[in-house]
Amino acid sequence: MAQPMLLSFNMQGDRKVKLTMTCMKNKIRLVTVNEDDQAQTLGALCSFMPREDKAAPEQPFTDEMVVFANFTNQTLNGFLQTWKQLGQKPIALKAVVTPTNVSWTAVQLHAEITEEHNAMHSGANPAHGE
Image (tube, rainbow, N blue to C red; front, side, top):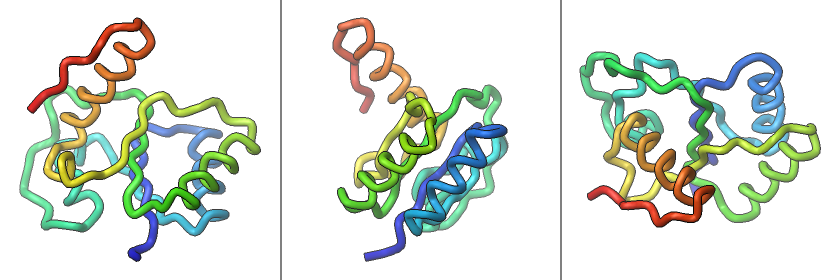
């Protein structure tokens, strides 16, 4: 299996340092994605497919988000355990790269999981996009 990879969006300061430590301890490749690359697909950001010549998104998101790729259950559990041991609060917006979302841009994924997160915390059902 390919090396586990974590796409990181908008992690700053101590949380970025702790994220780097967590990834190093669990042998996870950390990819920090800047705002200009939020218009790229998850597949391109993970190097599963070619990058496209796209302009930066007009409205990049600024909240924290992480995306897991090539993770086994054991790797994911190790990541989450280390993150908790370092005293970090959970990252609200998390996703796994799937055959369905691999062609989505980071902005599209962010919108989808933000909707799901908000629906989960309000007790409503999210309306999934196509």
